[in-house]
Image (cartoon, rainbow, N blue to C red; front, side, top):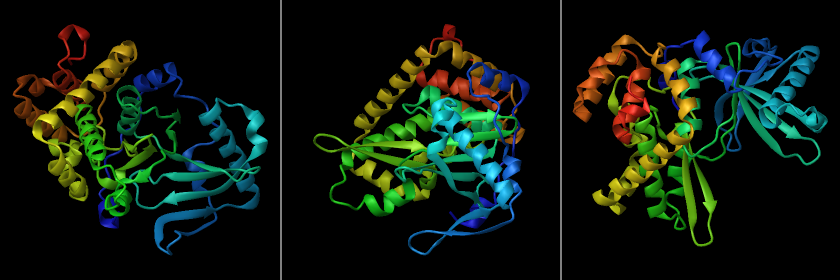
Length: 350
């Protein structure tokens, strides 16, 4: 990612009391032993260099010895809370290898590397400022996508698990040209990912904002594309921002889809994904209704962007109800209702 792109930071929206109540009701809001600002009290930092000698644009933080000991103990407890609901018996097995600060992200996230001292297996988790639009995105990912996602909130601090996979830009550069790629399966998954993103209005799915999971099957590999950045959940005004197919660095995959998948088959894959999302909605009716109430009443984008998106979607769907929407939450749930062809009595209209 270039620095000039990173400097176009989105507006930050705090979590309000209503959304905190929702997060508490569903065990996302739990007291933690430190907050994001505690990690800003570092003594020094140095660039994190990758195996090829390139600057990763992450800085490894150095803490005062006494302060660092307390912070690392707190970070271990957070990791145990995130992964195993606070089972402290495993704390003795863990140590914190390092804490890195991202210098280009919207929320300047921290990445914590946790290592099991008995087998050297490592894992990561992230500490960020809790932007409301991002947290709505995480919840919608949990409820509407095929992927479970684990995160916690305390105050204005967000804890996220690490999502494993090959970064999309790396996958396109290094894996796509390989002879063992099952091109049709990959094309099918990208079409479904494109549909998932648009239905719930998750924006900015450029190649570096998703990963590709590769799972060996008994005949060929299977693929799953997973979003890893949720900052742009129903935030932008342009409709095309919610369709990964329109981003330039996704072009090689788009060309693959165009070459291998005809229009009727692409429509079949879109309908398959919509059916799966609709099924997930039916399993989480009460929770999604609670989230809808919070989201529709919340301010998570500018008025200008809200006006632009509702006009573009009204034109696209040929549905004037979008013009009556007052918030991005209302637009999101109306878009869900229209694209999934939900009955009005299901309660997803604004």
